[in-house]
Amino acid sequence: MRGECFSEKMEYEVYIHVPFCLRRCGYCDFNTYTATDLGAGASRGNYANMVIREMRTVRRWQLDHGIDEPAASTVFFGGGTPTILPASDLVRMVDAIRDAWGLASDAEITTEANPDTVDADYIRELADGGFTRISFGMQSAVPHVLRTLDRTHTPENVAAGVLAAGRCGLRSSVDLIYGAPGESLDDWRTSVRAAIDLGVDHVSAYALTVETTTKMGRRIAAGTLPKPDDDDEAAKYEIADDLLSAAGLQWYEISNWARPGQESRHNLGYWRNVDWAGMGPGAHSHYAMPDRPDDGRGRGEDAYGIRSWDIAHPRMWGRKVSLDEVPWQGEETITYDENAEETIMLGLRLREGLGLDRLSVELGRELTADMFRPVLDEGLAVIENGRIVPTRRGRLLNDSLIAECFGICGL
Ligand SMILES: C[S@@+](CC[C@H](N)C(=O)[O-])C[C@H]1O[C@@H](n2cnc3c(N)ncnc32)[C@H](O)[C@@H]1O
Ligand code: SF4
Image 1 (cartoon, protein in one colour):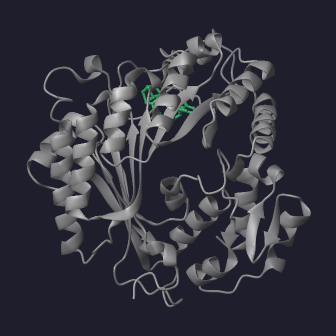
Image 2 (cartoon, rainbow, N blue to C red):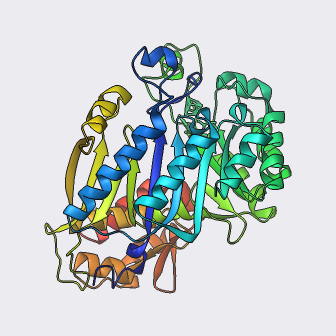
Image 3 (cartoon, rainbow, N blue to C red):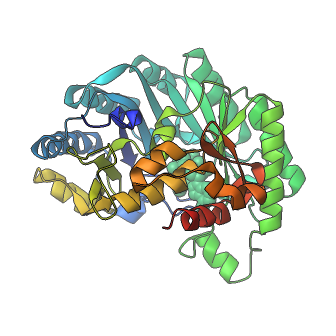
């Protein structure tokens, strides 16, 4: 039976990408478009209908390929800015997931929200429609940092959103970014403390990534903004980890902290490598092979799973959806070895760590804790209950930890 060794493979998640923003933040490289970028002919008004049409096509494709997924355990709307759409559109898409696959009775249903785009009525409509969580793009609580990041919201918008969510029984998370040009260590402490004071049960804190294609990337290349500094970012990571842990939010993934039991189940699913279907321009999907042997008989270049990714531009994507064809830009087979690499990279980001049992099955040879002695001696990881768990040093030097573990596993 599929998934008998890796029980988490029985989980099924649905991601819906909403590729629209009111305006683009200068640092952001996500697949998102403003009305000006899109021009005439690509409509936000019809977007929910198109996603629902894609769901039906994908469901048919799954069944044609012997993939019969269980009811969705989590749903996540990301972007872009999902909350740029009317709340009723988001709820209709949730209803369509229930029709296509079913929804577990305790399903976690999250949307990302730009604090500018939601008010109490909007949040109430989401809660009434079955949403359980909302993740606000707070980024910073310091006005000059928000300006550098081109954010249009104020710290007060975030507080109002979190309060409204709490009144409707929704769990709240906030996203923070550290390392913006001009942000001092004290600015960062202010932002982390402000997030804690909001009373949220979950915080994501990301180091600013600078992509050369963004407005910020061009300004840094031209020398009009300073480059983020690795030591400054490491110091800010430690500040976040210290302040959040002291406030009762424990790290459970390198960039994520939560009160016990309030982790994002959806994101944990990605890191545990479960099956998910992604809808919308640029969204990725990931399925285990329906007939995959999970008893150690699969090896090396044998097929372990399938990955596909949707066409990135909304107009091209929409054309394909209208033909009732899967709107994919591409698809590829994931081999057992490639999957083992992903298991290592993802597992070493997690507080629960990397299970040696599972990795041994995926690699087809037994791995012992002793083989990992070099990374333990360097203080990058510890062994807990047969799992390799990164230390804080291992979180800060995660790329080195992963590279060493690849070497130890012969990958
Ligand atoms: C799709 S956005 C969240 C929702 C909404 N669009 C917003 O920004 O308010 C997801 C998160 O990715 C993070 N992010 C985006 N670009 C980033 C970058 N270049 N470096 C670090 N984090 C980034 C931000 O924290 C952002 O909140
Ligand atoms: S950070 Fe969020 S609001 Fe800003 S451009 Fe990216 S997706 Fe849009």
